[in-house]
Length: 79
Image 1: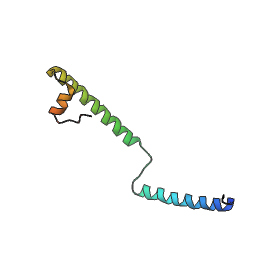
Image 2: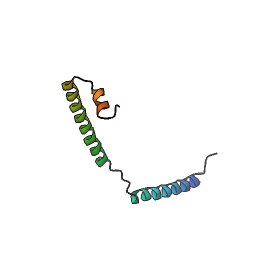
Image 3: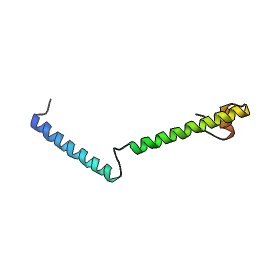
Image 4: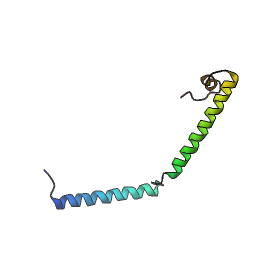
């Protein structure tokens, strides 16, 4: 059975107020919707990871061993 319009409206107002309280609580804990700093950090991380893999690739080529072998030798992640 569907709620009468007035009851549904009041229910939605209550839900909105609760969500607003939750948003304010998250903001007071430092939560943000601005993801630009995290995105920039991920880009820097990926660039450094790519450069590291390139150096490992050159080193593997120079030593005539596999990249996987260097990962094991230097205790690097194999994923």
